[in-house]
Length: 568
Image (cartoon, rainbow, N blue to C red; front, side):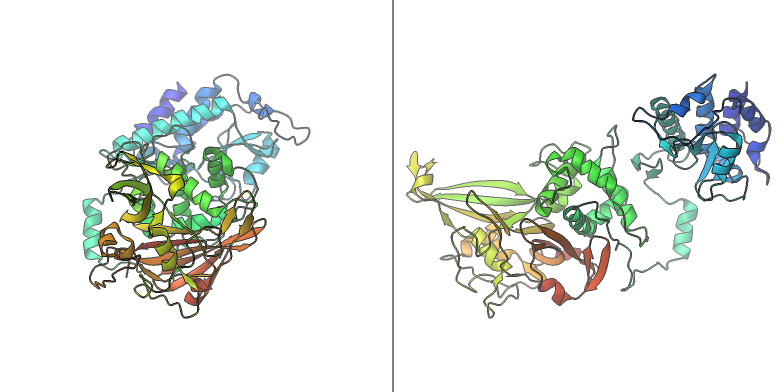
């Protein structure tokens, strides 16, 4: 039987490789005989694929077509064993020009390999009237009558089954004790790399490493605007330049067990690979947009969306699709150790103090970002007396009269009298009493995101607040910690400077800006590539920016990371 010989040849043949294509012997002759060119369709005109699918696959689905297709996937596409991969590398060349690349395809009706890019496979299809071909890298089926890659449920099922078999063979032969880190949508397998003894020896004898120079552009890549998607592009730029998130995804640490191709974490893994591949052409994030629409329905459609809303939705979906270090699903945001919570989650302490017995009720809630009110909004408690807190500590000045980020944080963490209309039941007094509420930082996240509330929505008012807010390159959050609360007197902070303690100190690495009005606007991002190099990301266009450009910008979302993450 041909198929048993083909399978045996594909997986068990221990013979030496020769300089001639291995698949040109009896296996190819038998495969040609089974893939008879008699089952062809005479094309009268080029057609388009209907919503029901390609009608031309029926000409292939006769006799033992399923077994024939399985053999093609085993021998020419997935190639599970090392031996079959070597055979594929030597034999799968264009029969017209001899090239290995140029998107090689194989005819489904006969064993004929040809380039797709140079249209050699098109010439074969036209001359032989063989209308179906298979992509030897991705495994997709192309119909020359429909002039498109097609989807057929039965063929797709066979492709997935053979792909899983190939991965299983690879796991047994090459990755004995390792689990798959994640699989991309193009069928490639990424596994945890551990050097062999030979590789360790080479590393010891070659200690010189490739250094990233100051003018290196790896990691800088524009994003195509897919129709009012600047809100997504600016957040993607900020996330892909988040140090720990970048290290996580570039080390293939995500282990996905989702059955469908709907995992946003897998797509982010692919996105990081694209950003740090060295390619300079703008990336088209169509699949990311589709997954966002799928998992965050309120963001679906081509209307303008809020970048802050997209950030929270993206972190939420990533959090739900992640697993923590113990392999547990991240369903509880209060007790999770997934990469999203490790980086972005902090603890916000709320102290409610009874005005009668001075009893304090304390709760701690997780947060991913801090939303700060601005002067000019309808919220009370502005203005604040200048300079009495951490402004000097953070290098901010009130000489120009500008509001600072520290002012906003002071406003956020100062005691607030709840009033008689919001009495609480005091556990000490056992009755409803007036109280004060104060928010402080119990636990700081590795990456702190500050959201300046520039968009005001109310029953009577919808507008954008354009108040300029000065923000520093380096930020010390010590005055706003719960542990510093005892040193506060009358709303002022006791400033203590410890140059050796960097636990609460942050460095700015990304700024998202909004230009325009509430009804019509555009988002851009400043990102820090190296310690002192900044770039402006405006969808597909990336230009160099100065520190002054960054600090003079309006600011909508400010991203800081802890200073102990500074890399030389």
